[in-house]
Amino acid sequence: MEKIHKSRRKLIKTLILSVISLPLIGRFLIPGIKHRKVLLQIKKPRVPDNGALIFGQKKIAVIRMNQKIYALDLTCTHLGCTVNTTANGFICPCHGSMFTTGGDVVKGPANRPLKRLAVREKGGNLLILS
Ligand code: FES
Image (tube, rainbow, N blue to C red; front, side, top):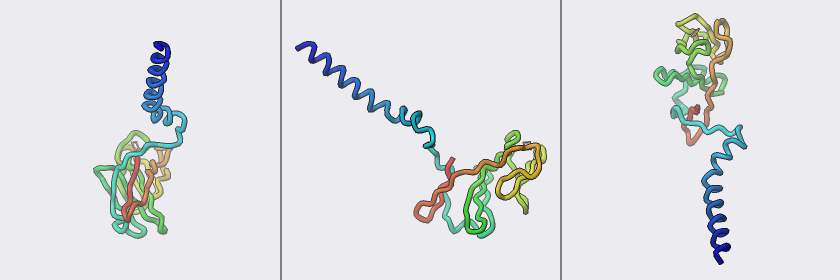
């Protein structure tokens, strides 16, 4: 009888630990699924046609070009300064890197494009995700 109680307790402990650890194990087993944070939420019509909304404090540009909407992290990929907006794209005030409106490098020293942020549409709003 004692042996049955012990094995039942062990089974219950194992079940509880399994349920608690499933989300953690899932993150390692399925690394492609990122748990993203909402950085910004805006009304979709606010983004001008062939233009951009700049959120300086959040270092985010939300851009609409040819009906497509995308978002860029305005942190320079060289050493992390915040890039400034120009008519043709972005320029870094620290060492002069230049980027297109799509975030591609035009002139170094930066050698990687600006980071694209995920954009999701939800009920007429745009969610900008990390
Ligand atoms: S930090 Fe932007 S070019 Fe160096």
